Length: 283
Ligand code: SF4
Ligand code: SF4
Ligand code: FES
Image (cartoon, rainbow, N blue to C red; front, side):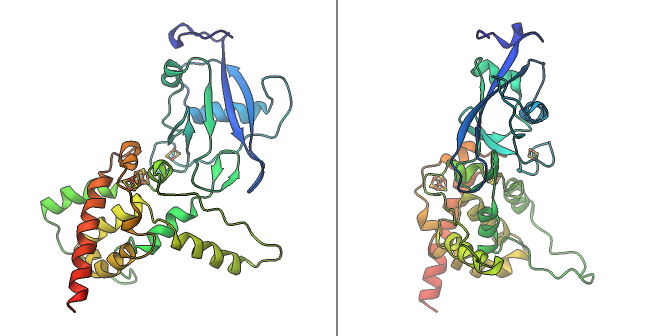
């Protein structure tokens, strides 16, 4: 098919989709070309559903259906994040007509670059969630009995906290961050689940925690109940892989789909960890 303007496409035209596939963890990736009849108003998830259903490449070879992850289909869960035409983003909100305006020849789909690939476009984002555990990104309450309403937040705090609370742990920010290097820990022969997890977490915990976790630490440190763990969070951010690992390149803030002010959070975390260290120094 020759390159066509999206507005001039009809159902007799085809959309070419180039997909970077991988048959399992640690396996060699390879490219595969698929094509499907053009339909208006598709998103990338609906394209993937059609490609999985036909399970045949553009040159007629039968192949295993492509694997990807998704959940909410409305840019809330972050599970469908992948690299689309070179840009990390959610595939449920990526509109094909818009993508074809930028590149009329084909769509190019790749898995995120900083997480281990499980299969095709599906990655293991466990390190992202482990980072939230490292900084204790929660409000410490025991929910077995009614403790009444929490302390009221000032309007100023609400306005500061709300944008940060929109993080959906999609991983776009860490994908774009030059300081966040891929950590892939292969399972050893005969290794138990427990031993493998311990080894994997030790590697994750020594690496950069990531801008999303720094921002969540700032969110919960500014919560009237959450701030009871402020010292622990600042200790975590002061340690290996913490705030000092950030090179301030600001790629993270440019790609966050929720427009979370990550560099503002990073600057706040920098000031808070310095103050925390001085306070500790003077007992
Ligand atoms: S500002 Fe820090 S966290 Fe954000 S992309 Fe740059 S190095 Fe990564
Ligand atoms: S900070 Fe933004 S880019 Fe990073 S995980 Fe949260 S929503 Fe995604
Ligand atoms: S499926 Fe949940 S963000 Fe796309």
